[in-house]
Length: 177
Image (cartoon, rainbow, N blue to C red; front, side, top):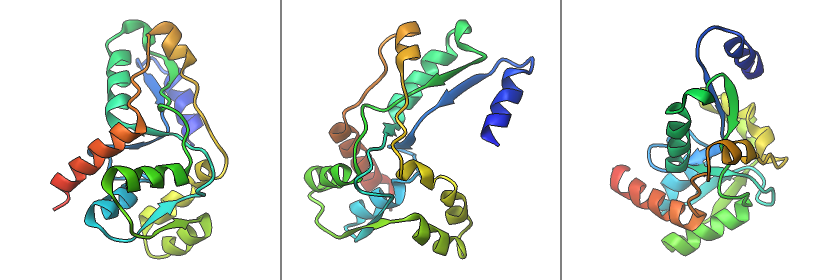
């Protein structure tokens, strides 16, 4: 469906900026794979991690994604193309959990959730039903190339995970009342 929409937009006479990003995390990133995890880390509760803990994945810090998109939007020569905005680097769920523990002194249980668990939860939650379709990104590493961006625009914004996670957890602490 998404590919059809992209083709439709690129073949239209409407200036379009198509940007592919990995799942995001950060301030105001509420509907993401990491949001529930991060929210419960801040609350000091046991939590879940969606996906395999050993699979390397990308998580893009919201501020990095926003900066890259604004840069693209400000240029006339970037429209009607597809752009990738990758994260700092790929990271496993286990490494991400270690960051939560290190940055926030979090020591509660984190349970990995599989596609089967999400399908079961989907019986009760429309959000979980939609999430099932995205579970492929938690099994097979999908790493975006930012080569086109770097060749045409310049250096990608890349906040190290330990900085982005710390800022996100602090933001959540202030806003999750």
